Image (tube, rainbow, N blue to C red):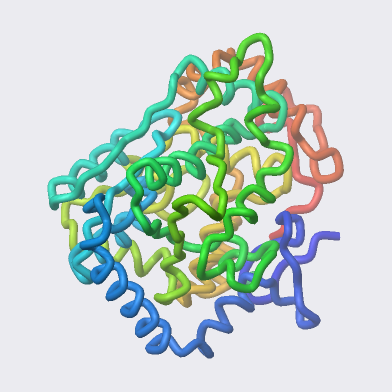
Length: 378
Ligand SMILES: [Zn+2]
């Protein structure tokens, strides 16, 4: 029996979600708790950190104050703009390349650089990136396993090698959207151990085989951090300022009038047009969640916007009925080409990852319509 949160539309099939006695999920409880946070105090705490960064600046050889892991999307761009323009820091923006670069994302990155930022765009060996995306899509139904390791590793490696003392991350996903919080401080200071903990089973060393050598995994390897050596402090912006993806979008849109949204009017599988615009493989990534857990990108977006008081639960339900689980047709040819798969192989892999408990097959001839969810959440 799938339980759905009474406040948002998150189902119990979401990994690591939990519900209180009233049937409210931990992501909603987190957003309710935000009302009790003294945000003025948090801002003061943030200002102290900024003061310390400014005071220490003369001691550092490197003139970058902080790294911002930067996709070019609304969230990381809003952080970059605030740190530079409101707090007078000199951030270095670090991007671990999307698998299949989306022109909209590329364009949005360029317009921010025009505002006066330095950035490092790290594009890993594409022969290996494609091999890993294909392998993990086949094995786990997730083409982004290696990419996930890369976005954790590269900004930290750059901070270490340039000796940049701070890294500003966006939000602590586990406490923000419901999940496993290992350490009470970890929604403020990024716990490097926690990052490794979440990667268990995904150590890039385990990927080495006849096709992938130890040199090939370097971009994905998490650096060794020991207490005696220089270690950057990584902070979550969402601890200090009330986090909302819709507010971030409004802020960026106001500051960068040329900032573009999805070329298709809305993003595949959902009703929004401003999220996950940088990688053409994302439509498939979210679709596979639908295949595995019975809910997709629309449930995720609608729940977040309910939590931010941007839409009602009723609207959320309507959006989910209309868009959730939409087949990722927009960039499919390019995605299949990237993964070196033909349509038939692709369909077989998707079917292999279907959860039997939630899917049933009817007699229809066309592949897509021959599968039905046994029980829809709405
Ligand atoms: Zn909820």
